[in-house]
Length: 322
Ligand SMILES: [Zn+2]
Ligand SMILES: [Zn+2]
Image (tube, rainbow, N blue to C red; front, side):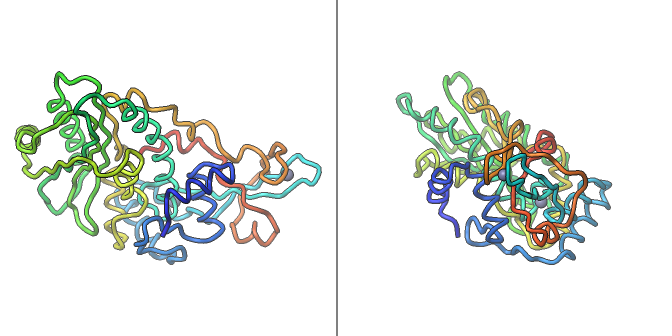
């Protein structure tokens, strides 16, 4: 189980960011079991992935199915322009949300994106303003559809804006979640703002969404830790059942799972992961990299004596939504 704070300081020591640290752990040491309860380990069989892909195919998500099947199996090859012409490989990932190999990296990426925002917002708190943890729930209907997810996100946004009407300097981040192996769609919200009564929140949520149960407490953790807690479900797929995973991928297709509102939205930094990579240069000598044509199986790249260079391709992540 990973101690995120420790991981972060190690990443700083190595001069890389947390996302890259996660990627390295995954490639060099096997699975990143970020929270100590990973059900699917690194060498889960291709059959499991095949079943997820089949569900995606059944819903006409052909390219996603293909990416999911091939995640972390092939690599692009690079050679550095330094004197020693180091040979490198960069794994090709699927970057899908419910991929056990990709989820820890996406988690680290989201932490990097939102941590400075939360820290900045809470550094100079107004009187009575606190970080508050809210859960907004829905009735379990036994299925999750794309329409349901879209409506749910609209409702969450509307409810938070209604509750914070007339309030200045508030911010919120929320993450959609489903329960383990079930279709319990709910949102965990980190709200920065004045006191909100549970009854009022419940009333607003019921008026807007028709659903009943809400919870609100003052965050007992610091901003960074509260954020890690909020996003931790992103780091692992919420099911063992491949069909269920496939259906979640379908339900969230084209929809974000993590949202920011008001101040947390306005202050969010440039998502540098979209435009640059830690692996622009040779990790051994710092020389520029040249991409070689074609792709090979990762095992073969390793046998050839190539060393890991992390993901360099950022195009796909531009389209990637979390
Ligand atoms: Zn993947
Ligand atoms: Zn080199």
